[in-house]
Image 1 (cartoon, rainbow, N blue to C red):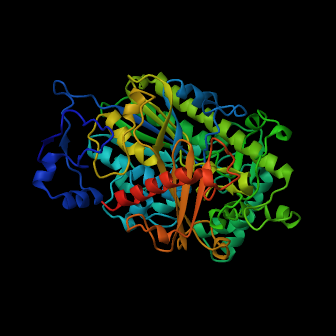
Image 2 (image 1 turned 90 degrees about the vertical axis):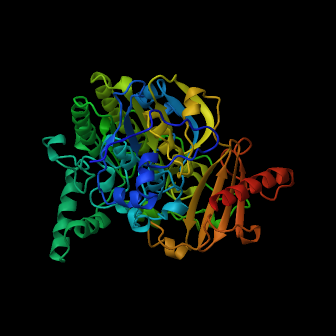
Image 3 (image 1 turned 180 degrees about the vertical axis):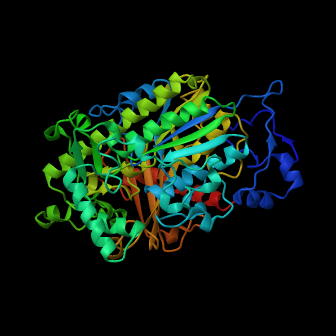
Length: 569
């Protein structure tokens, strides 16, 4: 078997992207690049001599990769004074907090596909919740897959990829160890596994069992039976006096703790992805976390209207929220606007309390995980990356959930703690696609050139440093009639591209089938938006046509034009 030595140190990435292949130069000289991709995609292992024992070789660092579903920057370290998040705040005090971090598309499947490949949605072509990443890009290389080729043990548990965008093995090619399941033994021994993966209330469990029985009578089984039951039994919240491991995240944390103990016994570096589900709907959490907050004091979104001079296609009708079984009856006696979803004040406060309780519950599981890392003596050589996959609307613009290009949907938390780097907080712009190259550089492997992000390592070195001027998000939008029928977006009429710098957001809505790798013409723009977060943090007004914003608009238009031009290269 051919033994090939990798470069002794990874290239340092600065403002300009260096031309470093995803594969070692020695391999490229022997096997064509396309063939290498195909070999890796097919799961054929190439034994690489990492050469860590060689004199002067940089020791590779472990990576604890913590993904959190639907987590907006509702954290103390991001300035939220209402939330109780002591464990993530403690992580922030030993790492770098990226205050201006943005996702590529504010929905689970597409944003995770971009983050884990370092490629934007127009490359991954994953815009919905049903397209498989490797169906459209068979040879695409993911972050854990790449690290595996560099000699890492790669493993995961919980929600890392969105399960609807990968194979049944959570993307088999990404993991050197088959993706972990959370066995029943990790759940509360009396209550057992939650009904439909979510609920422990006896009445809800009984109702779910009855609907599963009804589904079976109809000839449904497996996933189809489960979906049938979920359509009928799906409350938005649950508050019970139970242990943390009565619910999914508590069980995941216990299993992850055991996995870390096994990693501590091995010599190889590891990449371990742990994906927590909360605060995704439904907001289910033990009562002690609900009790941290008083419902009647939960702050409602201050602005629940459309933007003045805004763009209709920027909105949705909260189709995800409408899927929950306790919502339709509330709407039947509530005046509904022609966009979003109008929820009574009392239910809004219940949902907001539930979101915060779910954040605090998830925070406790993060604390358990990091305590295990510290106790095992792994922290001194482990990079910790914690990220939320996108933001979440809590009633602003009369919107709930995600699915927009607005600030509350696109801004998402990112905290990176790495050995030998001082803690800090940065206002540098960053994006999810930057995580891939950052992890590579910090962990001690070459940074691939053919990804869209930039390493944030210079920002960890100096929090005042900046590697980019703006972040880009995008979202497809279909007609309202079609949107009411689904959660995902498989066919679109418009694509909204949104550029966010430290003060402004500029969004253009492009026609059907336009993508950023095509020639851009200003006359193609169907509608546009301009927001000033210094003067108008709640996005009450579209300043696009306001005279004093003419120069700002021109500057942002040039940024957008430059971005599109760069995608053509």
